[in-house]
Image (tube, rainbow, N blue to C red; front, side, top):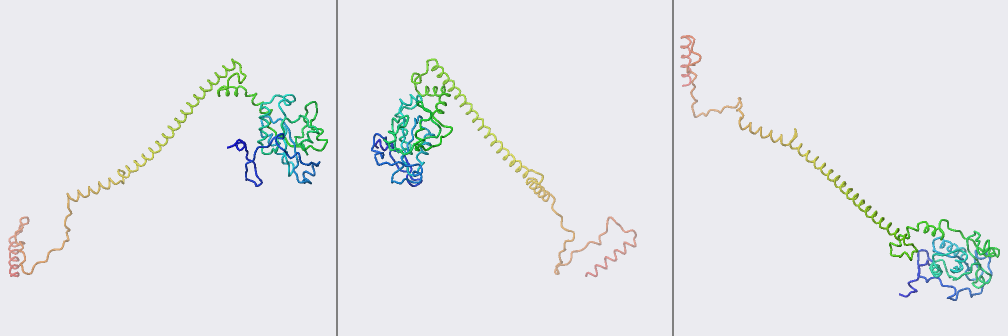
Amino acid sequence: MSATLLSMAFLPAGCPGVWTLTAPAPFADETSCQCQAPHEKLTIAQARLGTPVDRPVRVYADGIFDLFHSGHARALMQAKTLFPNSYLLVGVCSDDLTHKFKGFTVMNEAERYEALRHCRYVDEVIRDAPWTLTPEFLEKHKIDFVAHDDIPYSSAGSDDVYKHIKEAGMFVPTQRTEGISTSDIITRIVRDYDVYARRNLQRGYTAKELNVSFINEKKYRFQNQVDKMKEKVKNVEERSKEFVNRVEEKSHDLIQKWEEKSREFIGNFLELFGPDGAWKQMFQERSSRMLQALSPKQSPVSSPTRSRSPSRSPSPTFSWLPNKTSPPSSPKAASASISSMSEGDEDEK
């Protein structure tokens, strides 16, 4: 794959949600730009209502753009959307001018130029832009309007470097993004300098590259070792806590299962050996069977007698035998009973 394709960025196409591949914004001194086309003066009202000629409104925004961040991108987005049809040119000052009028930068000019090329709102990048805009510069690049925040920017011996642009009616204001700026980012780095120095030493940078003294280097390396020991102790504590939590969870599960099993065991025991349990009923049934086997039931008193067979004579009765227990009280009674027995025998014959 070519270097051009590798450096291509995703930019929104005409339809929302549809993205196409587009090359980075060109540099002004490397391409034949639209500034060579005929150009006529426009007012802000004409530009906002729609240009009278078939061409985009050329808007210029300049800056240092060190440590390119969301505040920079938002300002360029506002400049790009000031008019319905616009072409955004971004001027980036060189290192010499920036160090002279503003101060030292974190990124060099080549890095800052390249960062602007890959912002999707930028159509063209002007390298080594002037600190103060001259009429010759505006005419050269056919600039219609200059976009910048409305706060007076005092620099290069002037109370407001955009004063003459405002007086010419070519200035359109944008809004600053509060809470983010290059100075804020540098302040964070300076505030946490020791942290970043120790981190970079740990990642392999030398003390010379970080401009750190010998004593500070030893101090930072010792602090790194202490932090490693603290991290190990912390990891051990976390693992031990995790182990204890697992043991507690398992113990709770075991206790819960034991309680469930114990309830089930007690219920089964009571069902088998309780006052109304199955064991008592079985014992009572066996006991009643044993009692029946040892003492069978007597025949009922009112059982029917068998009928006599007509072919057989009735069994003799022995009612005539004398009763040993009750002898006759007198001779007369004895003779009377003997006579009655004899009469009965004759009747049977």
